[in-house]
Image (cartoon, rainbow, N blue to C red):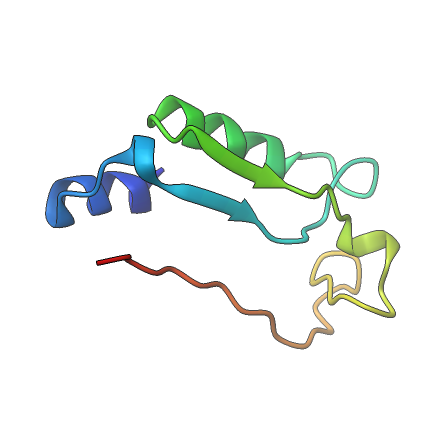
Length: 86
C-alpha cells in the first residue's frame, strides 16, 4: 500500500492504471496469516484494478521455491520488480 501511495504522490502514477502481480509466497494452511489476501485487499483499496495472483504456496513446493518461514531461516533469494512505463 505504501509503494502505491508513494508512486501516486511522488511520481503521479494513477493506481487505476497499475498492474500488480503477486509472487509465490507462503499461504494458509502453512502459515496463519494470508499475506496474499492482505496484499490484494490493500491494492484494491488503493484503487488498483488489475491484481493478479496465481495462488502458489511456496511452503508446499520447496524443491522449486524458497520459503523463509517453512525452512526456518534457511533460504535462498527471490526477486521483486517494479517498473514504470513511459
